[in-house]
Amino acid sequence: MTFLVTVILSAAAHAVAGSHAVNPIGTNQISVQLGLLFFFAAAASLIMLLDSIRLAPRFIAEENGQLKFRALVQALDRPGGEAVLIVLIAAYGIGATANLVEFYRIENSIWYDSLLWESERDLFMFLLDQPANVPVFWDAIYQILWLVVFLGVAALARSGHLGLVAEAFCAVIIAFHLTRYVAIYFPTAGPVFYKPELFDLSGTGSAPLIELLRDYMAGRVPQNGFLPGTQAFPSLHVGLAWCAVVIMARTWRWTLWLTLPWFLLNWLATIFLGWHYAVDGVGGIAVMSAALLISHHLMRAATRTRAPSCLPSKLP
Image: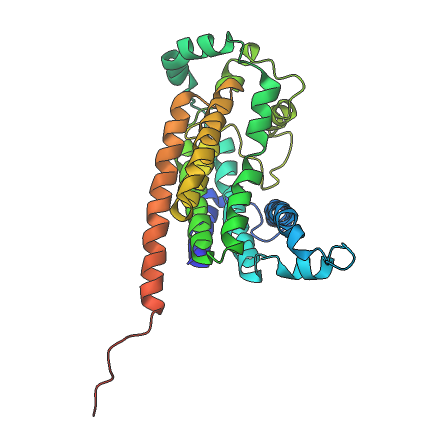
């Protein structure tokens, strides 16, 4: 089902972009696939490292006190090839939204930042004047989103919950495309682009990325598959964090004690850094919730279609 959703939404994005569409098979797609595969491999490796530390005492030889390294490695659970395939398929579906971003960049000329800024000006003035306004801190939280998301995905994959992994990635693909369509019809750049004088992000990873996006929107750098443009509403960053919260809680309810505070910090990070208005987070939650619901029903329908019938065959 993840493959089918990827094919349909990618073809639709290519058709909408028309003459602005990027090459469907090229460096753009490969770069996105390699990027997400790297995050998945890093997350899986980190989980295996922590697991090996936990299990190491069981593999200490009594006779000489040495670690039975090979036996320890063999005992570790690893995500299988199916999980890697799901990541690659999802990466293509995500990368295909570059077509919609190109359309957004070239065709939009009316922006609605003034509307959102006027409604949230007091909130920003209050937050930016607080001691908690430490851009380096918020940027660290903002930048590790994908790693944390993939930690959850890798944990589910190595625990044998491949169906849930596929469902999560299917929802992410749908959410990526939905947010791009919403942005096309309600374009907003974001506070850091609308009121740049208020945000001093010196020394953060966001600062060069903001400059890169300014250059991209001005047509000075080409689309590489990763560039989202200055799309503020709805916040896909908040949406992805929400996806991790929901998917993890469906298997391990106790993770809410960790994921909910992390989710709220991510939302605050998007505001403190000026990437998003507060309402963008509400939009991101709404879009991702809808995507998760759609994905869940699609996966259930696919499972029912594949399930063999339990009824006896009719006798002639």
